[in-house]
Amino acid sequence: MKKQIYESIIRNSKIAYLIINCKKDNHNKYIGIEVLEQNKEFEKKIKLLTKNNVFNKEATELIINNWIKGRFKGDEFDQFVKHVIENGHKRIEYTDELNTKNILIDMYYLEDYFMLVYSIEYNVNHEDEKLKVYNWSKDLNGVYIDAYEDYDNKSKSGNKKLTLGKKDLDLWKESEVIKFREEESYVISNRSVKTFYQTLTQKDGNNLYLESTIWPIIDNNENIIGTRGFSVEVNDKLVFEKSLEQNEENFREITKYCESVFIIRDRERATYVSPAFKNVFEVDPDDLYKDVYKLDEYFKRAGCNDFFDINHEFDFDKCNEGIGKAKLDNGKEKWIWYKFLPIKNATGKISKRVGILTDVTEKRKMQEEKNQLKLDFFANISHELRTPINLISSTIQLIKLNLTKLSPEDANKFYKYTDIMETNSLRLVRLINNLLDSTRVDAGFINFTPINSDIVSFIEDICDSIVEFIQFNNMHLVFDTDTEKEVVMFDPDIIERIMLNLLSNAIKFNKEDGNIYVNLYLKKDKITISVKDEGIGIPKEKVNHIFERFEQV
Image (cartoon, rainbow, N blue to C red; front, top):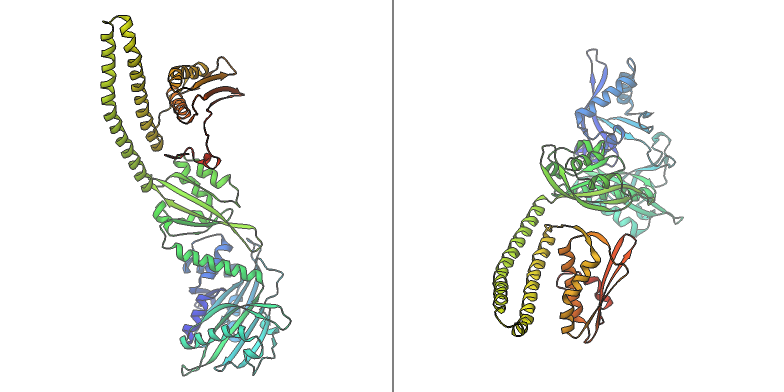
C-alpha cells in the first residue's frame, strides 16, 4: 500500500520525477541506470531541454547514461550511488550547456527496495525567487506531530516551526482551514494522494499561496495513523502559471477526442499537437515539434499561398483564420479550415498561439454538389421559360412580316404595339438570364467576358433604349457625363443587366412626374456611374441590407 501511495505521488506530481534502478558491471560497481517509470512532468521538462518531442523510457535511459559517462570519471558514479544508498539522498547541480539553465538532480534511496527517484529542478523563470517548502505530519485528530520549514529546498538548513501539538485552527482562519481538512479526510478515507492549491491569510494580512500534496501515514499493519504532506509556497504569478498549465492539460485531454486538429505553438515550434493530426494529414506530427512551419509545406504543394502568409506574415498577437487546400505526403488533396488565437502569459505578453484545423473536404464537396443541383434546377426552369418566349418572339416576327402587306398608315398603328411586345419579350429573356446568372454567381460559375469599348456611348445607348418607356410612365430621364468618350474594359452583358436593374428600380420607386438622373464621371483611373431618382429613397437603417437576397427596403 505504501508503494502504491508513493508511486501515485510520483505520477501526479507537478515536479519532474524519474524512477530508476542502478546497473552494475561484472566487478559489482555501479555504471549506469535503468528507467522504471517517468511521469508526465519529467517528459515535459526533458522535451524543453533537448528540444525533442519523442521520449519513451528507452530514449530517456540512453540520454541519461550518456550524460553519466560524460559527467563521472572512473569510479565516481559508483561512489555517488553508494553515498545515496548510505545517506538516503544526494544532489547534483550543474548548468546545461545547450540551454544555459540551472539543473538540480536529487537522488533518493527508498527503504526496502532499490528504487531511485530522479528529480529535475531548474529555475527557468524565477531565478530571483526563494521558495519555502513546509513539511509536516499529523495524527488522525489533525494535531501536528512533526513540522519544519525548508528554505530553497536545502533540507539541512530547515528551521522548526512552532506548530507541534497544535491544530490548523490554532494557526489559520476557520474558513480557510475547512478546505484543508476536507482534503485530509479525502486521502484518509480513500487511501490516496491529493495535490491542491490554497490561499491562506497570515497574521500580517499578507496572502500565502501554497501548492500542497498530502497522503496517509500507514503503519506496518496497514492501518492509517495520520497524514503526511508538504506545501510549496508560490507567489500569485506562479499560481496563475499553474492554473494556466492545468487549463492546458485539461485542453489536451478534451482535444484527444475531437476530429479537428488542435495545435499549441510558440514562435518556432509546436508544443502540442492533438491526435487528430494523424487522421487529417495521415502522418505523425513529429516534425512540427521541431519546426511548426513544416505545416506550410502541405499547402504550398497544393499551390495555396494563403496559409503560407498566415504562418509567415501575420501578427503573432492577433487572431487569423481562413481556408486552404493542402496536398498530403501520399498525394491526396484536402480542404482545411484553420483559425489561430493568441495566448497571454502572466505578464500579459503573447507567448503562444492555439490553432484549430478542420478537414472540410467533404463539406466543400457537398456544397459544390448542392450548388450544381441548384444550377441545374434553374437551368431547367430557364429552358422551360425560354420555350414560350421564343414562340411569342417568333409570332411577333411573323406579324411584322405580314404587316408589310398593309398600307403604311395602317401598319404603323400595329408596329407601335409589336415593338412594345418585342421589347418586353427581350426583357423577359434578360430576366431569365439574370436568374440563371445569379445562381451561377452563388455557385462560383459566372463567366466574365470583358471587351475594350466606349463606356460612355454604351451607357447612353441603354438610356436611349428606355426613354420612351420612362416617358410612358410620366417621368423624365437626364443623362450627364463629364467626358464624351472613354474606352475601358468591361463585360457589356453584365453592365447592361446592372443598368437595367437600377433603372427599373428607379422607375418603380420614383415619384410621379419625377426625374431619373444617370451620371457618368471619370475619377482618375476609375469610372463612376450613378442612377438616382426623386422617390422616397432608402432608410439609413436599411442601407447595409440592399445587397441581401430578397431584401425589401
